[in-house]
Length: 165
Image 1: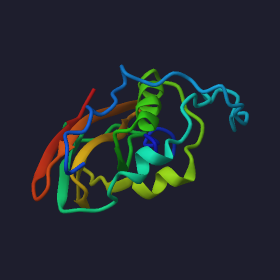
Image 2: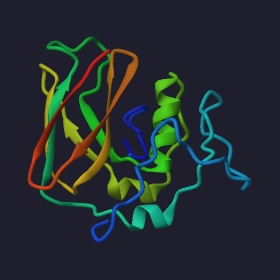
Image 3: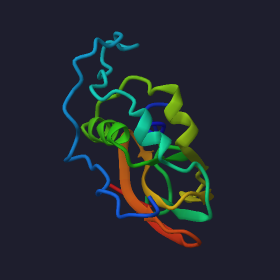
Image 4: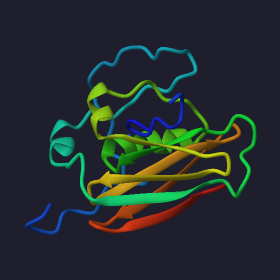
């Protein structure tokens, strides 16, 4: 989910940071011209890649996320992997669009360095470790529906999440 790209074929230490952006608190669209989407039904991004926001993020750490996509057996067309992207203004926009059921244009390649993927087994289980502590969008597909959950990973801990309908 690079900038929340689980959706197509597939995303602070010395003071209290401001709360992370959520789907409800997106920044205002940019006035910069954007390239045309690669597919006519693809939604163009309004949020520019926020270099400073990403530069402040760590890429690795000792936090982990485990979970389940669905509730046992995966319907046809479901993801065989989930994406784990840090919550940023950039990924919040992608999550909002994905949850509306629309495909979003490809993310800026720089976001990929911060996006992690976990394979999903036949029962929908997944696990990933080596994450930096922080807030993440965990996303996958159940059949043709995108499912996303926001979780907080803590240093040295494993957080569990269920991605369901």
